[in-house]
Structure formats: C-alpha cells, structure tokens
Amino acid sequence: MIDWKNQIDSNVAVLLKRVADCQIELGTSDLVINQKNVARKKSELSKRWMTLKKNKKEITEEIKPDIKTETSIEISKYRSLTGHNKAICECQNCSLGATRTKFVYGVGNPKAEVMFIGEAPGRDEDLSGEPFVGRAGQLLDKILAAIDFSRDKQVYIANILKCRPPNNRDPQPDEMATCMPYLREQIRLIKPKIICALGRIATQALLDTQTPLGKLRGSWHEFENTPLIVTYHPAALLRFQKYKKDCWEDIQKLKAKYDILKQE
Ligand code: SF4
Image 1 (tube, helix red, strand yellow):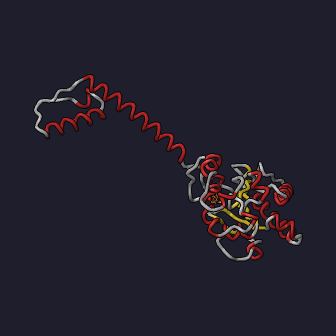
Image 2 (cartoon, rainbow, N blue to C red; image 1 turned 60 degrees about the vertical axis):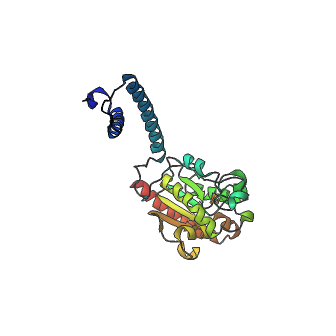
Image 3 (cartoon, rainbow, N blue to C red; image 1 turned 60 degrees about the horizontal axis):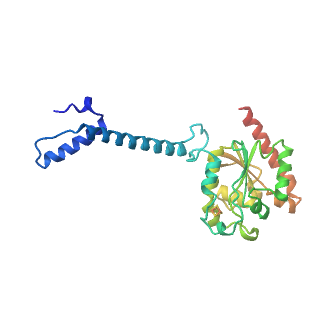
C-alpha cells in the first residue's frame, strides 16, 4: 500500500492513482512505481502549475475590479484609460472606422471630477486625434478658465463617437449605439462627480430622450448615478451669440455643485 500523501505531492498522487485504477480495471495485479518517472512527472506538473498561476495572475490583473468605486454601479474591466484606449483604438465596429484619420479617445485628467462630453470629432480633431481643439475647443478652454478649470486638471473631455462622421454630419443613432459602450467604460474608469453634456446630440444620447436641449437645460439630470447638467455646444455658441448667457448660467450652476461636492 502506497502512502500517497507522505511520499509524493498530491498532484502526482492523483495522477498515479488514476493510472493504477485504470491498470487494475484492465486486470493488472502488480504495480511498479518508477522513482525517476515520478520525479519527472512532478517537475512537469510543477512547470505547468507555475505557467497556469502566471497566466491567471495576468488575466486577473487586467480585469481586476477597482474596489474604490462608490457611485458607479458597474465596474470597469480595464485598469486604466490607457489600457482601454489601446484595446479599442483600431475599432472598425461601424463605417466611421474606415473614413477616420485619427481615433479620438479623449483628453484630460484621468481622475477628473468633471467630465465634458460632446457628440463627435470634427475636422481638426480628426487630424490631431484630440477632442475639442478647433475654434470650438478654444472657446471651451476659455469657458473652463472662467471658472478656474483647465483641461489637464479638473476635467476630462470626450465625445460619444470616437471617429469623425464625414463632412461633420450628425452622428447616426446606430453609430452612437455602437460607440456608446466605449464612453460608458471611460466614465466607469474616470468616475467623475459631475458630467456636462455639450449640445443637443450628446444630451439626447446620454439622457436617452428626444426632448429639446432648451427644455433640458437649467436643471440637474443623472447618467448612471452621476449628476449631469446640459448646455450648448461651444460650436453653437460661435454661431449664435444669444446662447452665451444661458451657457454661462449652466456653467456657474456646474461650478456651484462642484464646490459643494469638493467640501463633502
Ligand atoms: S465611431 Fe466608435 S464604433 Fe464606430 S468605428 Fe469609431 S470607435 Fe468604432
């Protein structure tokens, strides 16, 4: 009778027992244990075990949930915006992938407390790979500066679509539906305290409504448990001066909430 536990490790014991059972089943009456074979098998199993452990560690690290999550219900399966960007930057899930010059992921502080979300990259963004860099982007920077914000400190800026629609046409519903999971993932990773939707298209997509922007602005909404405020897109402010006053009111409302949240 072999003392399985004391003579060899449990993995080899299980293997040998299986072989022995099989041989007994086939009519063998004498079993011979070759010590060299046992040592070799033990070494093979040990290597396999180390490889499995290493692979498991790598997979676990990549999808490790962030236990600091407080407000978001869902947990990101990525560890960082960089990892997420890398994983999706070759996306061809909709037709815009074929016509883009550059994939426009987002810009700003990965731990920003405020996230500004527009609809899609325009020509300048498509060429540079960064959101809000044209005239509208410069105006957004001025608006941020007016409340002591800057795009590399308090905010993160992204769009619903990561690729430019040809000729700056409006994003199509199916394109937004296809791309929206990427934005959701960004929000999960950043965990902003406040979201500001810029313009009608981003607002209606985030709030899943057809209500006009004019009726949605002025009050607080929610996107996946995060307070959301809406205002005009800076490009609209460049075309229609009359919207600037309303936008300034919205931005001040945002800043007031931000100051309160900072004190909590
Ligand atoms: S717009 Fe979004 S879904 Fe379409 S190809 Fe670009 S990244 Fe992919």
